Amino acid sequence: MLATLLIVFREMLEAGLVVGIVLAATEGLAGRMLAIGGGVAAGLCGAGLVAAFADVIAGAAEGVGQEIFTAAVLLAAVGMLTFHSAWMTRHGRKLAAELSAVGKAAVLGDKSLLALGVVVGIAVMREGSEVVLFLYGIAVSVHENPLAMLMGGLAGFVLAGLVSYALYRGLLTIPMRHFFTITNWLIALLAAGMAGQAAAVLASADLIPSWGERLWNTSFILPDDSWLGRALHALVGYSAAPSGVQIAAYVATLALIVSLTKLAQYETPRAGRSAIRGGRKIEARS
Amino acid sequence: MRMRMVPVVLAVALFAGMAQADEPPRLTIKDHKFQPERLEVPAGIKFRLTVRNDDPTAEEFESFELNRETVVPPGKEIPVFLGPLESGRQYPFFGDFHRDTAKGVLVAK
Image (cartoon, rainbow over all chains, first blue to last red; front, side, top):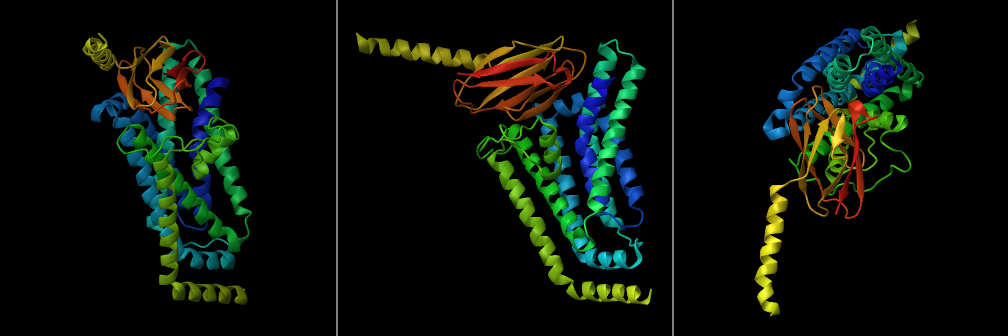
């Protein structure tokens, strides 16, 4: 049971950290729990489907279907995160003003929420499908008590959920004037990490050039297999020995998101300022 | 005399090359173990390693040294594109779903 718990926790930790960041990044948006909860539920269903069709996916495209599939879902997540970053820059200041004015504002961000719901779903699906394959393997080959296994798996899942919550609560302690800057950076780094991973996966299947395998190796300081290494892998895309194309995709995505948010800032300074003024007015009245 | 040896040497080299091309490196998973557990692979070039899973359950071929992580469904084989690897170096790998038994190492020569 403990072994199952540890493995489920290890795999779901990465998804849990993504959920934690998304929870913080959507603070103050109405209907976010529906989007995130729906994302987790859809991700779990997706995990079951991916596991059930693992042989079909792996067998597609002359054996590299798995890599293409992984890269495709990762790049979809990168797109969603990029969209959210741009959206947040347009509406973030208004949100910040209203948050500080009335505590929790019911700001509608349907499209942005949907995008982040998809990101959560993809994270859960990717990590979850491995868990399903692993648990299924134990269930059919080892004579372990299936109930104990189920309990262990459930406990691991709940533990990963607690990590999400802890990360979320931790991020909420950031002062309001820095909050959106920090959550925006976290989203940008998350996207960059995923883009780097997608590039690494495509290069590993020899679909794109690697531009140098293992350009450096920091595994003697922080191995990929360590808990901190795994956590940083999920959060900011840490990789002990990255390939050239992985670094290029990482830097390009980060640059794209930063320039997009700068662009959005230039486009909407007036709306932002008036919103903040409006927020202050409410504050002064109450 | 020496010059006469050249075609022979060339033929042998060609044959050796063909033999190598005919028999690409291959790993088989059986009873949650890799066979062979120590496999010599070419150094300095790109090559294709085939991993076959003869178990009734899925396995994940994983290696931190090779930066690879890929699921091998039961009864299927998948290609793993590797290299160029450093000559003389050892590259450990394992099956992520059975870490205690499924272990092995690639030796680049």
